[in-house]
Image 1 (cartoon, rainbow over the protein chains, first blue to last red):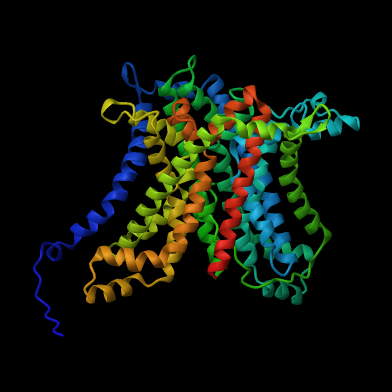
Image 2 (cartoon, rainbow over the protein chains, first blue to last red):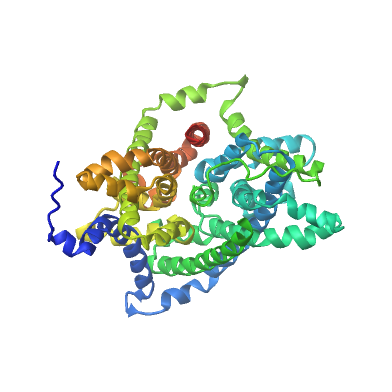
Length: 291
Length: 271
């Protein structure tokens, strides 16, 4: 068998970058058409009105109901991020540190709950703590009327309760890797140096887990800030959230105003980008302990 | 849906930590999470089986007898399968290419997994309708637009799954060996690389499918009433047949569960 290697002088050999670029082209075209272009157009048209270039769309977002929508979204996202964050972290610790190995079934369930949001979740919550939900009726039967106490599933408190359904298991899954990598030796070292339970938490556990916890909560915040489906199915236009406002500005008949929707979406993107940058920074810090 | 690309596949802990500071609060907390997850499911079950005289499964029979249910389910299946085909082909091929020729791209592609958090469905939705309403690209209301959007949004899932299996295989050596034996690059991709990443392709497909099956916001923005998917159906049904809608919500929970369970079974078998 002869291996006659001809000195190839083909086009592909002379210009290797051409084949590299050609291979990457389909992905690049897809990303440009369905991601870059839409976002670019959204940003550009947020600075345009019928009269041409202007900041009027942005002025529109900082007053009245739109400003309130921003405040409400911020508030709800912060509350669910902290609530889900604390519950999720503690549950991750409970799972990883108490048992010899975390139950796979439980983790699967958690990932189902973290992923199963949106319309079905909204209806499940209505069937549970809605005006004639089963928990509401159960409580009524023992003499406690949720709805006479001012609670409603269609309000902000109801939304927080609903978001916690996916935020709590989401945080559990986000925290589990760092909690699992928390070494037993650190705990033993603290103990042999005479640390009390409180000191162990204050000087060892919390400082090590804090970066992942803040990062996880930043992601939870973004998750809730950008969510639309659950709130939309729960209360239609009754909830004053940015994503709901945007929906009605684009799809609605009476409020139709895409310029304003674009401006709101750009502002939202800025907030989300900040949250994700916080996640990135804290995630890098957390990795120091994950060797 | 957004979480999958960020968490490693379920695995045994690096080291079983038998923490000396045990307490009942741990069990209480885990039980609380379980209760929190199941109480709304019980709500769905009760609402859909409640009848004047006890329990009835009439709504289940009626909801599944409704022919429109199958047409919406069909729409979602169609969108799901096309999305899987496009996303996974694109991801597998591009990742392989990046491994071979442009390693500098890998960290950039890794960043894609945070994309859904920065650009949520609402943002992408309003951007896309504006790009695709002007005549040369008037695609609003067509399944093509929805599938295109889904293919981009699900890239992180596919990326994570395929990259996990590509890392294990030494693609560079394999490719060079095949090349020196005279295989065309197309044959290398189909016969050598694809079998290496097959498990990643399947788990990526499951993740993508379970995402598309539950996606509501993009469908509402991009196609609305002209191409109704399963989640849109659930939402619309609620105003005139709430019981049917609740039956469908339950079905969606079961489907999500099934996908997650298959994923676990599949990952375990691989190891």
